[in-house]
Amino acid sequence: MVMTTHSSDNIYLEKNTYITAVTPEDFPSVLDVLETAFPDISRTFFYSLTFCDPWFQPHHCLAVKREEKIVSYLQLFDRSLIFGDKVIRFGGIGSVGTRPECRGRGYAEALIRQALNIMKRDGMQGSLLYTTIQPFYQRFGWQIIPNNEQIVSVSALKPLKPHAISSRRLHEDDFPSLHEIYTQRQTVLSGALIRNLSYWQARPQWMNHTPVIVLDQNRMAAYFYAAKYNLHEPVLTITEYGYHETDDAIIALLLGIMARKAEEMACTKIKSFFYPDSWMKTFLDAHGLVEEEKPYDYMMWSDVGNQPIQAALFEAAEQGRFLYWQTDAF
Image (cartoon, rainbow, N blue to C red; front, side, top):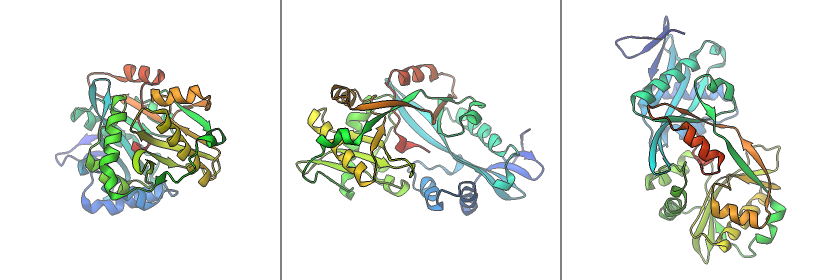
C-alpha cells in the first residue's frame, strides 16, 4: 500500500482513507473499534490501558480514518528499560485492532509502518510487543525473545504454606514500599522497566488485578501479581513478584503464599519467569521444585535505532539474564 503525506500531516493510503493521530474527540470511536475487534475484552480494559497510563501521549495514538470514520487503531507506548549499565528507550506496540468488516485492506500494516517511523524519529532504540500472531509481526522485523517459563506444582509447595495469615490486599500507603522493593531487587536485572512512584499510584486504575502483599511480622516483605489466563487450565501465572531480603525464609514464605493463592483459584500449577532471579533459582533448584520449563513465545523485540541491541538482548534472554514482567505488557 502506497502512503502519501499531505500538508496536514495526515498520511493518505487511498482516496478518503488516511492515517492520523487521534484527538480527544476520537476516543469514543477508538473504543468502539477495539470493542468490535476484541469482543472478549471489555471496553473498560482498553479505556484504563489508555487513559490511566501515567506516560500516556495522545500523539502516539494512531488511527486509520476511512471517510472520516475510524476503522483501525494502534497505540505506541513510550517506555524505558534497564539493559546492563544502559537505559534503553523503546516503543511498545499495543491495542492494534481493525473493524472486522475492514480487515484485509492493509490498514494495520500501514499503522505499524508509521509507528516504526515515529519510533525512529523520536530516538527510540527498539520496540517490544506481545502477540499470538508472531508470523505477522516477523514480516516487519520483530523476533521472538527466547524466554522460558518455569512451572512448579502447587502440591510441592504445600510444606511452605504458612499457618498464620501472612498476606493481605493492597493498601493506599503501600506504594512507597512496593517501589522500594522493585527498585532494590528488579533494577539489577536486564529488562526491568524504569518506574517511579507515579507509576505505582496509577497502576491499580489501569490494571485489572492488584498485588498480593506478603507480610513478615506485619511488615511488607514481598509482593506478587497473579492471573489465571486460561479458565480451562488449572495454572496460575505469576506475572510479577518482588521481595526485600535475599533470604531463604522470605522466599519460602513468598512461594507458600503463591501456593495458597493458587489453591484459592483452583490451580494445581504455578508458572512464572523464576530463573532470571538468581536467588529464587538457587532456592527452587536446591529443593527440586521446578517440574518443567516451557518456551514463552509471546514477547517479541525489534531493533529500531542506529545502535542495534537485539543480539545482546537475545543472548541475555537465552542465558536467563533478561526479565521483563508480564504486568508491563501492552
